Length: 250
Length: 250
Image (tube, rainbow over all chains, first blue to last red; front, side, top):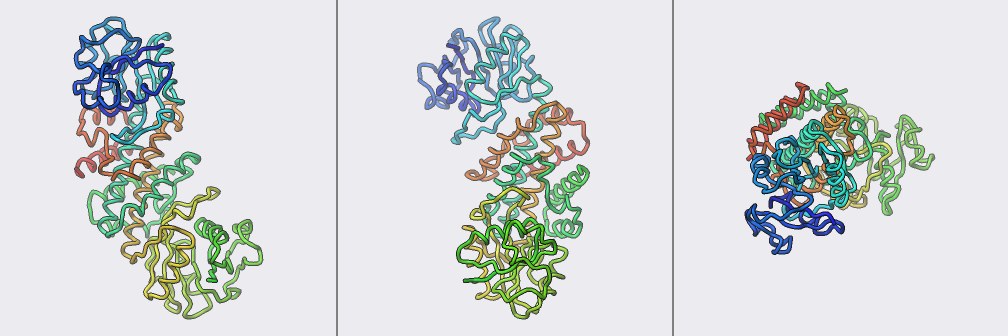
């Protein structure tokens, strides 16, 4: 049985804890959380610790904390030559302390409080310098997910940027859609089927095949009338830039 | 039994034909198509006509053609005082010939060739100046969809702009995501679960509640490292503008 300990108690850590608690061939040994209350409902209280010197020996330590404290947290693990991974998309593997064996375990998904995720469908991007370590990380990842990818730090960083485009920026476009609806006393719900189908479409078509609309059609009359309708300068600017970008992509 | 005839043979017309052919309380009387081949697989050949003077009397004529020819098509209907609607998001109702009673029947969805849609979930936005006409249009719309909204032309136009943001522009962000993956020899499939969950999230949370990422967190280090990674000037510009827009939305 592979033993895993998690350091962290945020969104990603919480979803990982749940996923490991439901996994058969992995034993979640300990959860190190500064604030016990954030994880008390997810895992047996006896497994929760708050101090680094309470950490026991495990096959794998997963550091799941904010990017800016990963480096510091890694140095506090009171062991040497143990396998330690982080869960970040943008931090290089080598940011982890070289006292231990380094690796990455990056689940590419947007996790929210109170919204459960089927971990089986979450891509997990793994990395390690040593074949044996990669093999162990892969084994753990495959216990949780059907989609495990071995990436180097450069690929992972590019993927993280791509994720910002398809998640953070896309969600902001939803927000602009909601604002435009609200201004006309329309419920946001009216846009939901379109939002869903837009995502659904690229499950089978490529985004290039799926692209439609006035920009793609070079329909200057409609574009001009849309820009005339937009009152917010920022929205106008986004409309203009994305229209140009669609047209340059042809 | 309400009789409906459709003028047009494009994507929207084709999906409407299919939906009406499956509807119980509506009789699809005729389909006027310049190119018979585009609709021959969807409807009884006897119903397909190619000339305006072959049009019979119907309770409702639905003009489903490109925005730029709606006005011209409307003038060619060889009747007076009949109820005629168009399916466009951006054209005012009054663009239709005043020889007939005017209306709008705008299905808010992205239709693709060869990808079927469950019309029950497609919002249909209707409009008319006369109560009786609105009532008939509503009856027809409710036969196809569970989501029928009565909007004025101004609301519909704003909704069309919102649809450009959440569909056309969102799809373009998917395209950029795909480009970034391709550059690093990563399959686009790796982004699909994230794309799906991003859409899924705003079915229950508001986009403002769902917003995450370096822009939202004002994580300047990550933003700078992402901009350093992007080589395409256009992608840099989009990243910068959308980051600023997320931060101004706080």
